[in-house]
Image 1 (spheres, rainbow, N blue to C red):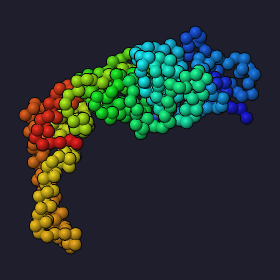
Image 2 (tube, rainbow, N blue to C red):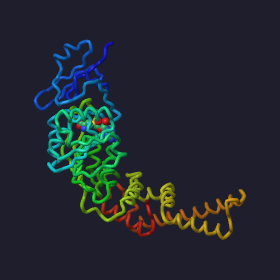
Image 3 (cartoon, rainbow, N blue to C red):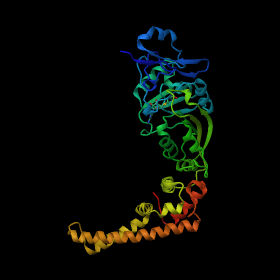
Image 4 (cartoon, helix red, strand yellow):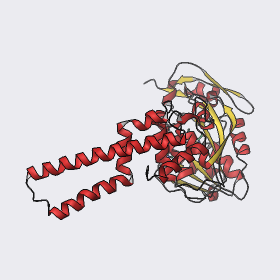
Length: 382
Ligand SMILES: C[S@@+](CC[C@H](N)C(=O)[O-])C[C@H]1O[C@@H](n2cnc3c(N)ncnc32)[C@H](O)[C@@H]1O
């Protein structure tokens, strides 16, 4: 049977990389060489051995290996870029580094050389095995802890820096986890992450920029973001469709005193239609109902009805007619309360001068001010 195989740096001879089953020749640079990747048939093994490119990275795999695009398995193979990531991450010899998605370990081995220890989260058990073998061969195993599992679902241990070429599919929730779920202060100096270029641009956007969105607004509240370098898609195997950017995210030490859950729920509402005016967003019935359900007004409205029910001796055994009346009463009260809430919300927006403004143009200070105005009037988002 003819089977397609592909040689590439970071993989042992004979590795099967299904994501790369194209007939074309692929080229990419390494520090010293420009390696040629060539698809060959298995029955050309002898020729393959002769012609095979020297792996750019040490590796320990001795068995076929399929890369899963769905898990973002694009291996960064350019040693220049890998070295640069570690350098720009400013790793200190005393640091514990958190790495998400070590894959075959191209970045991990460099981090291990620079840091005191590395804790890596990897979801793919085949990668974990390969990483363990590779790191053991280098004698660096004592400084590496690999946690097998989904990085989003597993608690992070304390760490000084996060440095990672992450699977791009988890960029948003991972950044949210790093910045909003580790408590205050976060306890780490910075996260140096390789991200999809377009995603990185959104993260770097300022209010008024077309890319500015809820994620950028949330991140700006608690961190600063800087662009370190762009990385070509040609530096990965298999070659993804998109280019990448390395960014550094630094948690702020001066985070405004705001309930972060309340802030996140508030920006979710504000940015639900980022190019509409806040007046248009908050006048939507759906939004008012959501606010009604969450705000204290709901508590009050329901309480009134519950008290009435207690006084009337209404209980679960009431017949359907009585229940129907009750439901009708409840709906009427709810409709009234909804109108009151809508007027209140519009009044707050008008008084603060926000009715005609668009969320994508508001600074953190302005958003915080609006949230404060809402909260002062008892309108809660969380
Ligand atoms: C883009 S590759 C990076 C590999 C390596 N760091 C490199 O630079 O070549 C992403 C890695 O993350 C792993 N991964 C995907 N989803 C994950 C998750 N939710 N938690 C932990 N690891 C994950 C994949 O199996 C893959 O090894």
